[in-house]
Image (cartoon, rainbow, N blue to C red; front, top):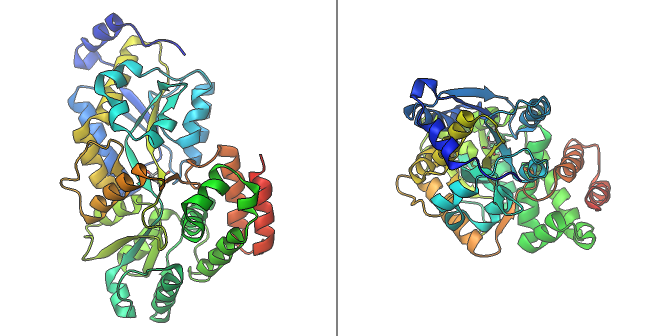
Length: 413
Ligand code: GAL
């Protein structure tokens, strides 16, 4: 791991007139309305500092396409200034020896005091900071259209999985799509995060999907998880296959559907559509996962840049990402909790306040678990193997017993 650029080189570069200062090129997959609105705050912060923003969006929720694009750029010896990344993908790049060392910036700005240890696990390689975490998303949420639920005669928050299924069936009987879903492997895995956490609890989830304990994976609990996935499959509409997550969110926003099981980036879509929590929509934890969060943190990995001017601009980007005021403004729009625990919930709506409260509670106990779906539970290769089993089961190509057996094979180290 190379040491940070010398202070003199950085000072000289930062002293350049704004027009001469190099910009930052940022590769990301935030192309939906709410995502773009949040990212726009970072872009304007940098431009106010005289740093040009060269946007490099690679569409595709969950980031699979973006990861393919960044491999091509780095292989060609021309990495972007920063890349949005998740979990184990960051650690994979940390091992390649091509990322920058942000230790001096992190020390000066106290990142290790404000970022939860569960998140730092993915921000640091061999103890060195290589990424700037911007948020803490969680996937175990249900988003509901309040007017649809009223018309379907569904009152209150379902207290159990079976109550949720009963509520969804009432919504369908009332003539609405019960559960709006996007038929893509990563989205099926988002549902799986919640069903696994709800069915087996934190201990089962950790043993099976983080520790790969064969006994936990082959337990009757896993069989029940797949049985429940099949129940949810019966409640999505016939056109779910291939649908993007934000289009599914739009079905709930417009009143075509009653529910969506999705991470809290979905809230960004509701806010971007002018919807208000508590009036137009409700947010609640997937039943049975209260006190727990299946989390995913968006981080910007900084690749090592030889050009002192570009490196100076890169550090301004990292600093802007970690600035508490930005973390508050960004996460209010994005739907996530800040990555820093020293950011108050002032100005966050009720769903945002709950996100922050739930993360603080989970991080302080044993309830903060890495999302399987978003690469925070296990390596990229095992994650993709889980995607394959879960999506084939969801599409009826595997029965429950076969799915358990194939999952055990996928998780066998
Ligand atoms: C996740 C990302 C979120 C949101 C979501 C849908 O991977 O962490 O910020 O963008 O994809 O694209």
